[in-house]
Amino acid sequence: MLIRIVRMTFHEEKVAAFLENFEIHKKSIRNFPGCHHLELWQDENKKNIFMTYSHWESEEHLNQYRDSELFNNVWTFTKTLFSEKPQAFSSKKLQKVEK
Image (tube, rainbow, N blue to C red; front, side, top):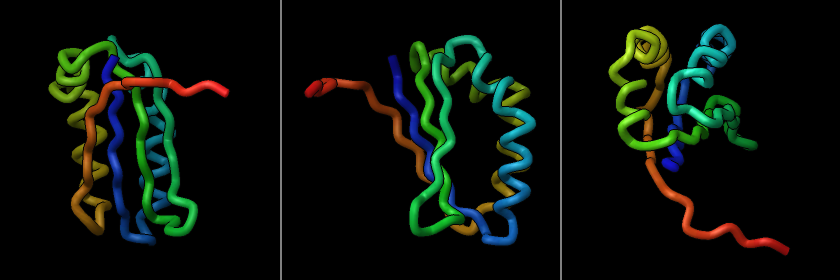
């Protein structure tokens, strides 16, 4: 399982456009083959910073999404809204600590 976090900083006046576009595409992204989980997070203090948190079956599945028409449509629009370069992290879970 691959965990992917993408941190995006938007121009404040573009946040609504991002949220609208995410709302339109979120189910298609979540139902893309190999995607097992999708969340959208917002920074607690800087309301124009968002992160997507997703679980992918493998890096190959993530790359298939990144090569897809869906990703191309979403990302082409989204990147026009950025005020800073986005940051992406791919990780794997090593441990889950229980109570």
